[in-house]
Length: 164
Image 1: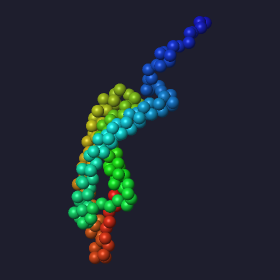
Image 2: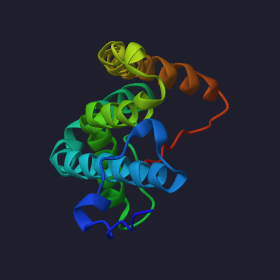
Image 3: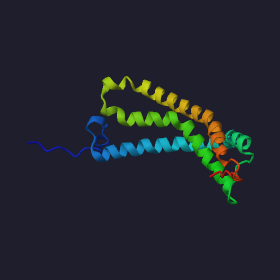
Image 4: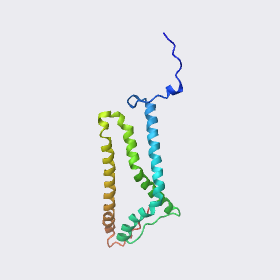
């Protein structure tokens, strides 16, 4: 029976095999993936801050056309909050490829190497389907405004759309 020397710190920092990770190692991996995703969203939101006024115009134009009013904020800081929310949404859009990759990188080891060859196909299709859904929403938004504003009829109801 031989006595083994204590392992060095470098040896303790072993390469983690995703197939045989402990629960705590899975949580650590998840934390790493979430931090990268949130950092990508934060960086995208910084760019989104400068694009938010243009994006808000895409919403304001159909509202003004069909309702006759522009959007209204109900607080002093409402304009800032609206621009911040729009910047975060744009940031998520910019960070979507990174986020999709992080999701795949987290779940891919569970499927094995045979299924992993479909990873790029899954990531591209997820991105394309999201963008098609966003484009469809952009096309449907004016139609929805027109449809719902038609319910005010001759009742003398005035629509005052809030931006929140």
